[in-house]
Length: 273
Image (cartoon, rainbow, N blue to C red; front, side, top):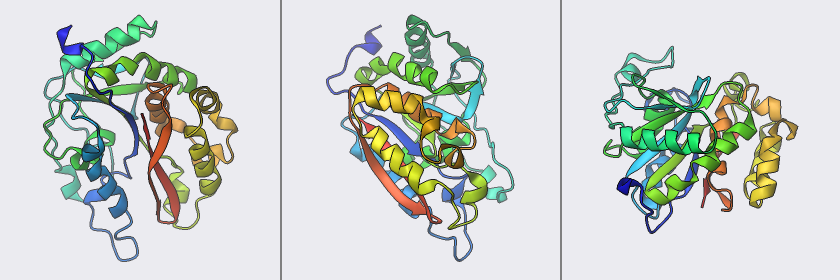
């Protein structure tokens, strides 16, 4: 267990917007070009903003759901190009970050210790909720990454509990990242300037995530009561990674570290701790 002794500086947890498909690597037509540039610049700056270099990263992506919390244990994870209709070159993107079987085992141990059944997947690789943003966050692919699934049913309280169970990782040099989108009504998003509920939900999200820990947890658990909740998230898989990140920092204030309008829609990223 020496690998998991406490480090001097706890790492924050992050909720990052991962964009749309391989958006950062597209040649967008006039009128759409440049929209993703501020988000790309923010992702590139994350590593320098951390108080210490992580020895490994655990990423909860919106694009993997399983019956139980499941972690990747493969030491050489392949990429899953789980988007469609994009140019051929976006299916040739490569990201060769190694896996971290020891960290995956630690994740399972922490979850099971909290009474949360967890299992391993020895074959699965990284979906685009991991490799697309991390091509910018950690372009050298030299930090091991473990991917953790969402749990089918998408219960917010269950994902907050998963985060709470994983809090010790922050003190062991492991960065916990939730990868999703703060607004994910795709039909509306793809019609610039016509994103129903985006403003009111983004305001609620900011008020919620900068509240104290108990109030934050209560509001997140009942997120469907938020203004325009189901307009912003017709299905909540892109919001649930946030619950894990917030749950792992129950006493730490949240701070909005990214905010921009992409095709007129407000999109936000957060840090806890």
